[in-house]
Length: 386
Ligand code: PLP
Image (tube, rainbow, N blue to C red; front, side, top):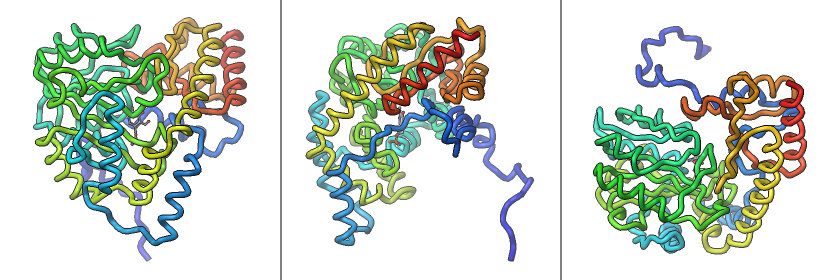
């Protein structure tokens, strides 16, 4: 029997992939895997189980033996439900422009690969979700990052300064900062996007977790309907991370191009998850509201306490806070490592989300209130003992 593994011939692998940095989140996640004694504010994963009514629909579909491929496009009922649902965020969507994907992760990858020709510019405001830069590079893009510290808001001037670009990526409410944009702020961003004639990829996965004002999709603004690809999904709002289902809404030409890639590399999103997603959109409002209220309670608690030791903006949405730890005199990595080894609390260094995250840490408050209280006490103790 031959054993596979152990090859040193690393010149065989793709150069672009070889040069990518491993995710800074994974590194910390690997350190704590299997450690029951650690409270993790590290990974951005809801601590809720998928609401029961959604699980029940999925179980029932399995009992009936519904386990085959769906259309490449996704189940028609789900596409229709998504189109109806998006009117909530101000956009009139035809279900013909809805593609069901294997999470926003796949949506982002195929959107980039559909749009970008080698060397075209992709603008990514930082700090940013960890997959944007690597996937843009793999798609052949020339990545330009825009630092948004210290208030982490992207503004008109930042975009027009870039001059020319094929794509601008935005994500709001934002991972890792929790920043979101009002309609007026989005209008400024839209003006700049039109001025530089770019396409926007708008990752709205935390749209339902908006606490300070109602989420508005940038696609709903004048002149944006034909230059926006909306990405959204069920991982965060319905705690369906492991079920892998999301969707993209795109103008016809980009849609066709995304569908081509999707049908070759993915075939379809998991059928069981698609069935759960239909139930989530049709009847999941109460459970969603309960989860949102609980995240808001945790946000208010965490921000109030963490302000005892750090400067921090109050997040508008998502379930992340991004405090500045510069007063400790430590780097983000040093702080995260010492906190983990001395207090058994995991956070992610801000630099995992780009250079301008230097001096910050990301804390995910998607853990139970008891754990959040204990973790916050430990962080405060740790800082006070320095
Ligand atoms: N986009 C953002 C901003 C995220 O924070 C995450 C997960 O953390 C994803 C996309 C991945 O989403 P999905 O599970 O739908 O692939």
